[in-house]
Image 1 (cartoon, helix red, strand yellow):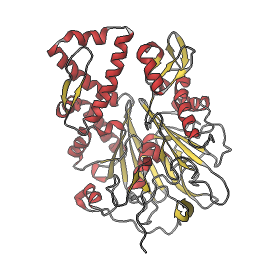
Image 2: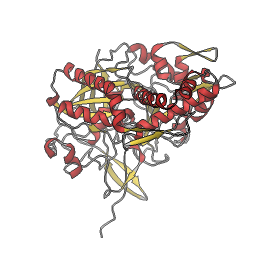
Image 3: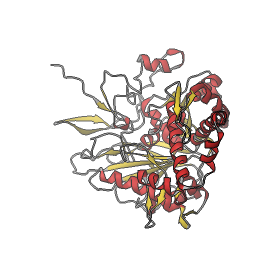
Amino acid sequence: MDRPEKATLRAGGARHSPTAPQAAARPNSPTHQSLCRGGRSPARPEPARHLRMPALPHLTGSRRRRRPTMGLPARGVPGQGAGRRHPGGVVANGRGTARAGRGEREWSLAVDFGTCFTTAATFGDEAAVGGVGPRSLEIENSRCLPALVCLDDSGALLTGRAAQQRAAHHPDQAERAPKRALARQSAVLLGGRSVPAAELAAAVLRRVYAEARAAHDGRPPARTVLTHPARWGTAERGRLAEAAERAGIAGPGFLPEPVAAALHHAQVHAVPDGGAVAVYDLGGGTFDTAVLRRTADGFDTVAIGGDPHLGGEDLDECLRDLLGERAADRDPDPWHTLWEDPGPPAAAQRAALGRELTAAREALSQTGSVDIAVPGYPQPFLIRAHEYRAAAEPLLDRSYELLAATIADAGIDDADVHEIVLTGGASRTPRVSDLIAERTGRLPLLTADPKSAVVLGALAVLPATLPPGPARAARPAYADGAAAQGGRVRRYLNPDGDLGFRFTPQP
């Protein structure tokens, strides 16, 4: 008797029926073929003879069955990474979920500490809410925690909605970009009080860590990986390590964001040996590029680039400039009052408008126009997608030039790149895909969930110096002077026979 097909849990915790359209197309499907050059599906790699994919038991309902673990798509494992298994299934030391038969309930945590938002994902522990598989962490019913922090009357740092609400009335007590402050300065003045930049970042990490533990019965993760911009060096990573220590996160591993994004791509789409993957990571406040080359046992980071001062916030400024032009034509006085009034009410209105601009920018990736309400004007302003694209063109041109420079630094041409992967929330800007397609003659691949791709990819990696299991060294995984320019991701088998991956920065 045929059994009905069951829904499977995909990246981000969303459930999909096997018969429903998939965000990540299966190989040889019409959707997948449309993404490939010439409409052809890429050739399946030859079977590997040097690695054997181990299997771990998993529970599905009341029945027990065995499923192979998964990290990157193993060479020659048909369909692996094509949507049949959970992306990011092997984490940290490669053990994935709790080891069956031993009563252990280990789980892993990955955190992408962003300029504007922070995302996190967990894997493992069948007893956790949501079951087995990579799962994006939700905080206040959202998978993106605003990075903003704000002091309260007692001097404690607020995060999330509470921070946003207080910052609207006490802007002098708020820091909107703790990540940027962490990279640039040792302390920030909030409400006349000097607060260490590491403590601002720690407030965000502490909130994420607490929410993740709450979803796992209060138990700490067996391993944690924090991602960071590719161009961060030893000093910046050291400050992030200090913030993690202040947040109570012991001995985390560290991974460059573009590397994690490439790993997530490789979990879903086959990359042949020798194939180069170019990553275009446009986040809220930073822009990273990288070129990685597939090897027999992982990835090599060949080149990195980007601009730490380019991101979605700059695209929001393009929208604001458009609104300013429309306001000047209608009545410039309310607009000038909005931006020049130093009082708390005007500050709250500016903050609200900033959030609306971000929402409008994201909406313009799916619709032809948006209406934006501006304080002081009875009627909203209509902004069309083509107007926004024209205003953002210089910034996007700059981003492509940086991507092209990174590809050139890798010593290859556009034609030698197997895939150009777009990730980061701002990469959904409509003009991004069109611009890259025009310049390279090929359509880039936008990850199904750009905001979560980095943390889902990070779940597949164990930094080389991070010991397995709960008992870990307190020092960061590579805050030991290693340079930011490059590294290697290598496949390995641990003593339990499970498959995992390690990232080792190159000196």
